[in-house]
Length: 405
Image (cartoon, rainbow, N blue to C red; front, side):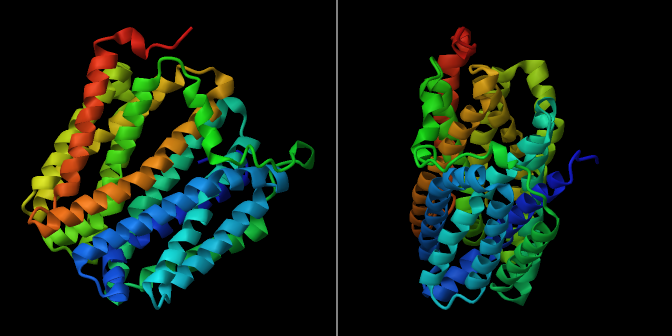
């Protein structure tokens, strides 16, 4: 594959390592929380939700700051610092003696995890405008591959103890930081740099382009509800799998890898064809309906093998977000596409804060009352609401989905 500039594969590797490091610890997190806190697995679910919220809050506030620092000092020092922080952070969590250390580690990981902004800026710096769409697609692919590989490795490493995946993640981040230090060139010319501006670094400012989109409120509501429901996977999957099906860390890792693979294949081979054949609105509706059915099926699954059947069918839920994003992107001109995506990222960040709070509490409450699939039942309800909004405000009023002149 031709990348066009030697900075591109290095930026993609940074995102790949980040995604692997994030995914590699998911299978062992329930075990480590129980070990450090002495809590039951059900209570550990609540603690896991709090850890996810700490990560998401740190990421929400750090992302625009790191982006502005990259505009001021260049991309290379920011992405290098993020990788070094990752290495130290995962090492810290590998030797964490108390649950408080684990919370500190997730806080630092949330800050360093904002590396996506500077990495995307590197791609924009070195890629012609007409080729940026395809290059940014590689960034999504790098994250997807990392999230498939990470949990699989984490599940295998769990045989050596729940702290081993953290040590490996630290080593990977350190290796990547070394590669960045010696090979990554600076891609932002000195004459194109600007002073750091706290107003631009305000995370709430990223919502402004969304508020200015006339008539887009129903689609934005669907985007938020969909992201909120989708948090059921990163926030609760490892706990759900152990509580509902008795899976160990290895089984959790393989299930996450299988789910990620099915979803990635859907995005690569199905999404574009579905939108071309059915249009964006109908494709969005299909994704939401499949999501509702899949969440419901997970909630009431009684055997582990059923989970694999559901995840193969449920991968079609990934049709929803690209179709929704495409509908929204037609409502703004080319000069504001970046602002739109920044606003959508902020919606995802808010969902990543609220989702773990509500979904992990629901899972824990359901498990205490004999229904460990409760979080997926809540996700199904949320997705049903999103589908209802599309039905009423988009499919029955087709002009509502069209760009405003």
